[in-house]
Image (cartoon, rainbow over the protein chains, first blue to last red):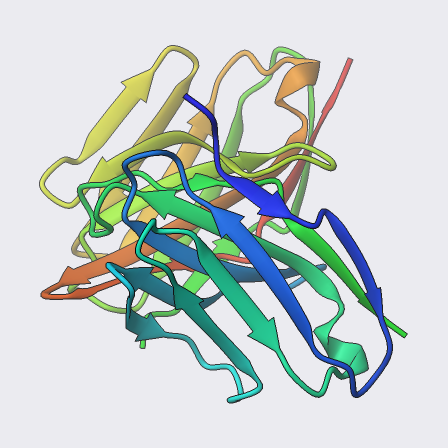
Length: 114
Length: 114
């Protein structure tokens, strides 16, 4: 079974631009969560999607948004990029979310904002 | 919301010694506590998890203990090996109706010295 796939792996953008990141979950997984990883801050929860609905959202500004398609693939969008948005963005999929289901992570998209 | 504190932030041990990483959580409703290992440049991978109805769980050289009263849980690695060198993250989740969110600690960088 293929693992969680994130594209692209690397991105370089300039301040003010917007960016879209993609995540394809493990086949059969319906829950996709997104995290921002920065040095010293660990993994910070952005949002979780299940069956095309956002179920939970972390403490990030409205510039961060996402969506999930009917095939469970998910995209994350960041508008009006700031230098502080430079980070590794990880997505994780699980069967249905919830404490019964293990989250499997993708390799991440490393975003650099110049 | 949930807050997870993780200590120490860095840990160096001699090969063959034991390593202990401790985490505390704030929300008594949390019921699932996974530990992830992230090697340099790789994705986080689940190494062990524990649920709130269990006090201890062991898998070969790795064990996790949970004290619900004190709201803390710990990772124990015995007979450490150089390949155990990585960043370890603890996490806690509250699973409610239609909601799922993993809150991570900031990580512990473990170095095993040969």
